Length: 198
Image 1 (cartoon, helix red, strand yellow):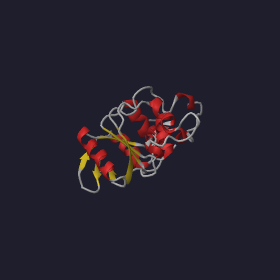
Image 2 (image 1 turned 120 degrees about the vertical axis):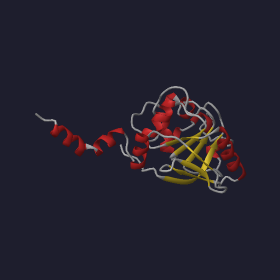
Image 3 (image 1 turned 90 degrees about the vertical axis):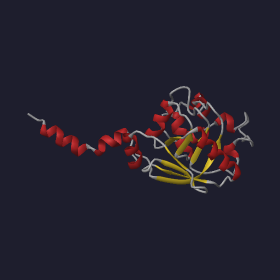
């Protein structure tokens, strides 16, 4: 399944300064029955967003209208816990295209990239600067530049570089998942096979 191409994203951000956010908090296990990737965004952080009677919790950030954007900024160790792909599906389906943290669980990080979300790992110091900037101005923008592998606080120009696997970077920039990547190489694969035919 192809996803939106990711090159440069300039957006406001939603701050979630909580450490050790695990995949069960991102999408509770009782919502994992569906096999299609759509609809999970409705239950992103379900138990943090809603009371038992399904009314929104006013003090949770996703229910605060002053915060919006395609970037989610989380605390250290984001996406820990079980390996459920649904956590990444929920983040994407809600509308986020980038998650920023000072550390990601490896499985969540890889699942995110596979569904078109760019996980940007920054230093604890830069993460603190981002949270501070958003606290001062909820409309503060971040620019995430995948080709240059940088993230910038637009208001001040402060930036930091981030790492990403070259293959995964290529896929994100082209809107590919692993199958799309193989499909894009059909001609080369066919040529190679024919050159080896006996």
